[in-house]
Image 1 (cartoon, helix red, strand yellow):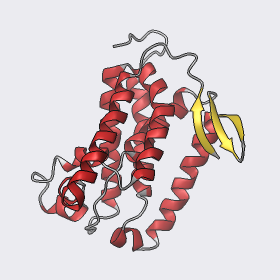
Image 2 (cartoon, one colour):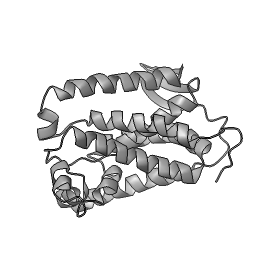
Image 3 (spheres, helix red, strand yellow):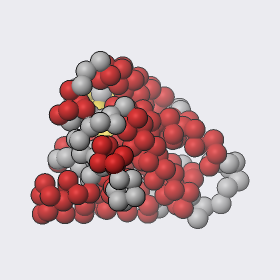
Length: 218
């Protein structure tokens, strides 16, 4: 079940922030390809290094959420941001959505840090912030239709089902990752970041969305 699009018929604004975030992620990835491992080591978030020197490593809280480990990592994250980000941005407004995205990314990093304080593995990727976007989307558009690719067929499914299955998978995978130190020592999928970002997005939506019908678009 692979999401490839959603219903944008109710969208009333151009999602300039979503497009800008996608562009920024792509540009940073090309910088990674040029700078190599040295750039990744410097600007990715490393839990043990951050705890040893929070002030010196403060910027990595932000830079790491625009970096990716490879083409598949980048393209997968940008697909989800493209599908779900525009409608959430339309509902929040551009400025609130920008703040929302960054805070969800920080919450995701904090959640991962809580379970990997001794790790020297660089953490990077936009998936924690995007998980926050999914948390907002499932609350705002639970009956919205998401087009998913199943085999050779494209089938519209409720967002509640598509995103609900995704977060359930993250919870089970996250619980499984706690039983092994493999991810902490050698890298892998940061499930706790996904969970933390999703919960932050879900909670923040209550604080930021206000009255969906009455709010102004910025």
